[in-house]
Length: 287
Image 1 (cartoon, rainbow, N blue to C red):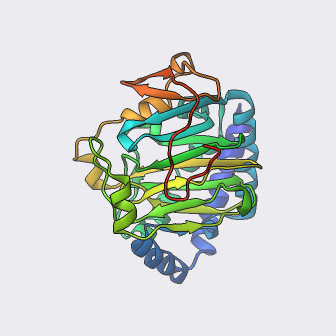
Image 2: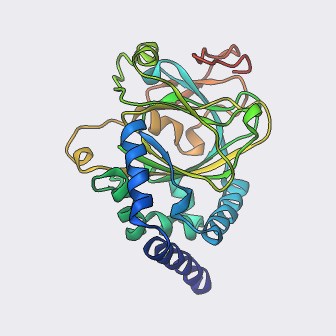
Image 3: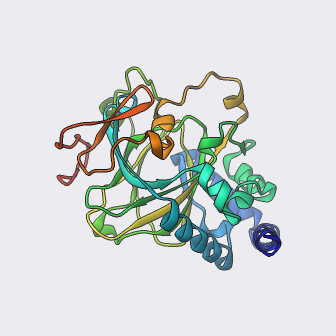
């Protein structure tokens, strides 16, 4: 245990030294300009290769031992699907060493704050702090949605070739009305940006006002770590967590493990018929 803790601390030290000595103010400024314009920016420059490699190794170990299959649709985001394997924050915190410490890095939050042009804080709702998702089956997707909190930093461990999906699509400057999400109105009001990803990429997202999804995969594998952060305004506004509470429910409460899909009902999951859910624009027949 001592050796594992020391190793995790050394990863954070390497990350923070990299941020201090290798990441220039000009690079942060350019990232900030892109982020404030598009609600999305690639930030792979924030972490050195060795840190990414160790994060990838721990992520692979955790998904191999603690993955839970989720298949659901959510009324709060217009009936869009979530089809994936995931590992909850509680399991990562219990069995991981590196990911929890990287999330808690003050140096990383300071760099993200420079990109966001405002303070980036640890998420006050623990289940949204750090999670792992894996897409492997044809049609797997993290469908169109917004997040409850302002920021997400995503570490891309593995991603399929562009032709097999798994890339990110974003609609910036949109608002989430959980009672009437109006996705198609958002598609018409702002451009949809599509971003190709590679293993080792990081991206930073203004996740509460940027409608976003992962394009359904038709092959290959997409494995990521999502780290959620808050802005100061999030601490004062009332927030509910219907979609997250269902998506990251304890495995004992996740009723479905088939490919036929589930539907959220309150904070529970129930079986639904196989038929898929429309994911437009750019919908895939495999969903």
